[in-house]
Image 1: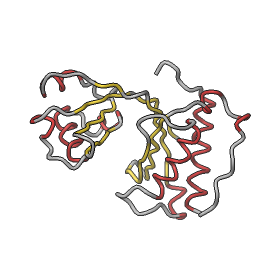
Image 2: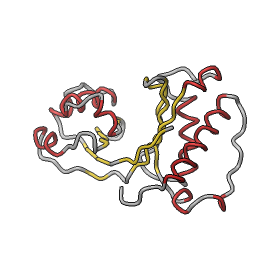
Image 3: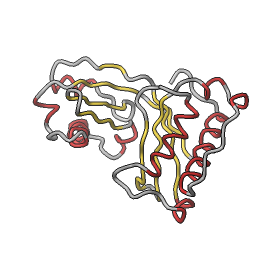
Length: 190
């Protein structure tokens, strides 16, 4: 990522994410932010995914693919959503707070990936680098962050799982041309 965040900016986002997590779980209002204390990069529109894990196991992950609000607000909002609204999990409880590790993935703007067929698509993906969005019309869409390549390093298996995530048959990407977008992330964690 060309415009990487500084170490201090990353620490600020992680601190604010932790505060948002604790407020959400304890049913407290988020304290307002003073924009004058934030750097231009944190005030600029940005898109992020917030991933919560317990001992390396996923506990919640929610984010935005495109920027629509200041990065700092995006991180706080998606921390709360990952803790309370990830449909795959029950809401995080206060008893879990000390076990949870927060990871923030700041996304680049997704770009369309032109490809001719399934083999060409496989050849254009960069494991460990590209986050991938698959779209099948307006109703089916799913993404995997670049970190998912660590668990699913095989390109075909990665796409199979991504199709499954968007509620389509796993071989959909082989049988029809889907809209494919790629992005990269700047990832940091507690």
